[in-house]
Image (cartoon, rainbow, N blue to C red; front, top):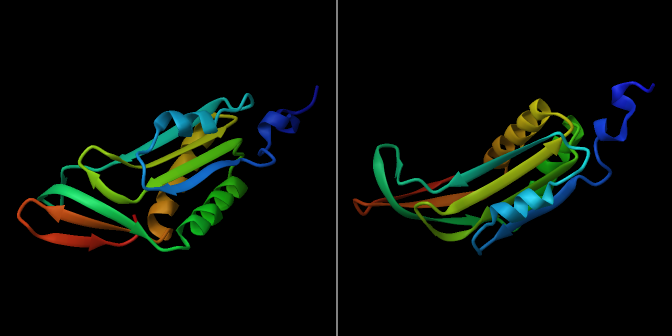
Length: 153
């Protein structure tokens, strides 16, 4: 009998990056979840970032996201790095740009791996690195009439 790590399901997939996009349209949890479906995956982790109604003690009415033209290329670089570090079977990430309201989906990422622990870790790495490295900016508008720009997601 072959060792577990010799089974194809234990190794990273040939092309695990299934979906990467920056969109002006509403995001779909179902689309991202379907994109990471893989018969060799025993664990799928999905993270959803939503627009909350407050930040730094102030009430948020709405916000807008904008991005640099290199943003999707940076998303790909990060996705490929995550796939190199973990046994990723499938990975997907979509981020919204444009004007959003409280409760709207701003970002959805998902990762499937052979085991749940790997899926959780890879998904956390993916969203954390996207947040810190992809040139996406948030323009928040507060209830008191003030506003602020926040760098990178």
